[in-house]
Length: 380
Image (cartoon, rainbow, N blue to C red; front, side, top):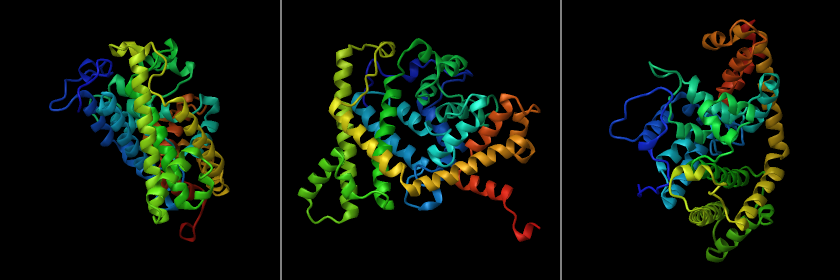
């Protein structure tokens, strides 16, 4: 690792963990966090949670696991260029989707709707809940007992009501402060990863075409460069070469613009970061191109009728599962029954149901639905 900037997060000066522990041997505090995330059950389940396409649609499409690894790779590259802490960035990247529901944003929207009367559902908050409470691995505490800095990085946004309930990691929303540069960086690495890799998956699926994407500036500019340099390249390699150049262009721009922002801010320590506006950013020109790409994907991929059909089925599964478990918690595994308690109107009751559903993989949710709502001849 390159030497740390004075305003980078420093594991030796961490704000600590909820439950005090002795210092790790042979690794720093942020490495310990990252290792705990990788060994968690929630992290393994990401392999079977969808990114855009439902998991069984094809073996080559991104999942939450492959997406998280890609975010970590992009994030580490940016962190190294800016002399920020790579282990913290990687840990945040690997943890940022731990609380995501099955079926991607469709599942989250359905569960949020179901939880409306109980405070709603948001996957960033659920990711924090996973690492703070739901993982059951250690003898002395619930959750993973991660450092403040990593927990802060998981929480991208938060309502004021929720912030007041979250203690230390909620304070910055109340005080209108910024998180560490590592947290800011990982947020944009996430954006770079999912936009560009959704282009790749969208083309692979046939839901969007090269001809459509040639109307998008960021893609068209890089596609043209590839065609000039490699005029006989086949479509698969042409797409990969274009996407990798798009990612590189975004990363280089982000590093250059962020470096300028940091110099202009005159930072000397991490506390200075919190008093500034966001310092990790694209240039205005690149931000406009990135926004254009996001609009294109929203219109042409995320709202494609085939994706809408998958989303419709996914939301029905989540709603029906929520309804039946709210009616009868004894249909859930024992640990969730205990967490739900005996009052069906209590927030804890609904939150336990949401915890169970949010922890499901795509295929597990589909199987639970089939077990609860369909009857085979063998079961009669």
